[in-house]
Amino acid sequence: MRRLEFLITQVRNSTDNKDINGISDAEIAGYFNDAQRYITSIVFKNNPYADLFKVQLEVPAVASGEYTLPDDCYSTNAISMVEARFSDTSNNKGYSRIKPISESEFSYIFGYITRDNKILISGQNDISQLQNIRITYFRQLPTLAVRQGKVTSVGPTDISLNQSPPSLATTDDYISTVDAIGNQSTNKKFVTAILGTIPPLISLDSTTGITTDQFVVAGYNACNKCLLPDVCETYLLDYVKQRIYTRNNYNDGEKQAYFTEKQENEILSIFSKNKKDDDTIPVTDVEFLFF
Image 1 (tube, rainbow, N blue to C red):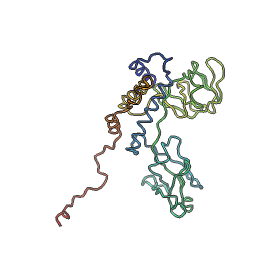
Image 2 (cartoon, one colour):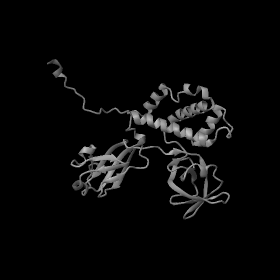
Image 3 (cartoon, rainbow, N blue to C red):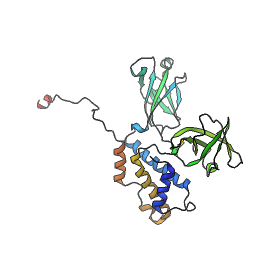
Image 4 (cartoon, rainbow, N blue to C red):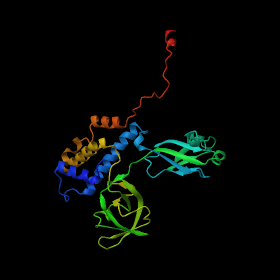
């Protein structure tokens, strides 16, 4: 998919909104993020095991049995599987599935529950034997953001850009960096200060991973190019056009549907399960039907 700047330009041209004083790039970028979230919610509701959104995270086992959910986990009910490794074997790398249980079973059955944005594993005797925990979950895609400038120098605690960032100070407390085509390079960099030189120096809690061939974007976990398949670009554009139309025509706002039923079905078909193997062994012996 193309970088966000190109999508914004196309939307401006097709909706006759070329004046940035009428509607800012930041506002249009927000609409693109709304479109991405909307598509994600449609997919999660209908196919929470879609491969594009599926992530596996391995963490060392801890004695407390408590594991904070990953930052990009879509929601507390987006955990599709929790596994534990008791020993190294060639079978599934030694991992065995841990059963989800109810709160009432937690005190006497080995399994896991989710509470306060954490996974809690019960059974202290079993926990002491664990080596690693593997969590499979449905992720939230990185947010979309426009480039704020190219990195020209990197110090231990600050970076400089080739231009003054247009909206960094008013957009987010964090930045991410991306490569030339918009893919994320680093994320979760907390901005501790923006110094007053022109262009300004940006002080960060960490500059690890940042290099001078990267670009800065605003956001805790952001990128410059949507990770949805290229075929979804049309739906992102259609959604944003409808948002702009609604914004400029308040009286017709209630009449606008961001996606038609046909479009939602098309989106679902993109992420639907499509394999030839049956989920279960087919029944081939039909003699019992004649009794």
